[in-house]
Length: 196
Image (cartoon, rainbow, N blue to C red; front, side, top):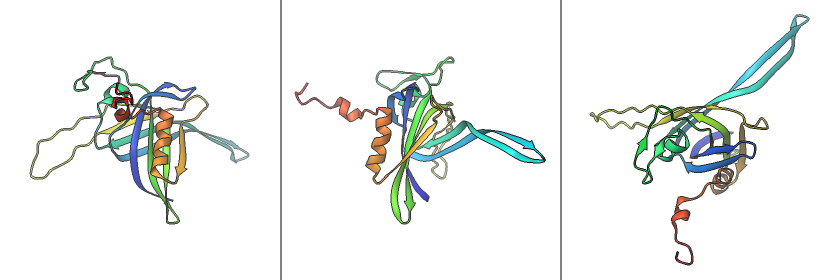
């Protein structure tokens, strides 16, 4: 298999890990890169001068998420900052606490010259605040894009990630949205059929 693309990184605040309930789902900019590195606990038992038992179990993981921008929703949902009603002002406090979030995305996969879409949901991640880097314009234009680093944990039932393969992008995207309870902002602001 070969991955040849990456699309639509979603985030949602984890409310109840037993029921996999999420709130405040949003698309976290446009995907540039995602790196997931699982970490393992290992134990070896030697007897009669050879390795007789070896155990390797998931411990936690690391995720690096690179996007073209970090939407204002991330300030509240991810990091617990105060966001004004008009979503133009963010207040950062020393005692703000980051929330656990779920992260979902899908990647283009090519297998035997057939394109498919692999959707991935990581159930529980806590991100650290992104570093901000600014520089003045010089002789060449240089883009500065955000990158978040987080720690992955397992949820109830020992699950930490789920993937599913789809034939279309729409199916992959919908699967992620359904898990996180995504509500399209355009639909929530559209007038009802009665004109209310």
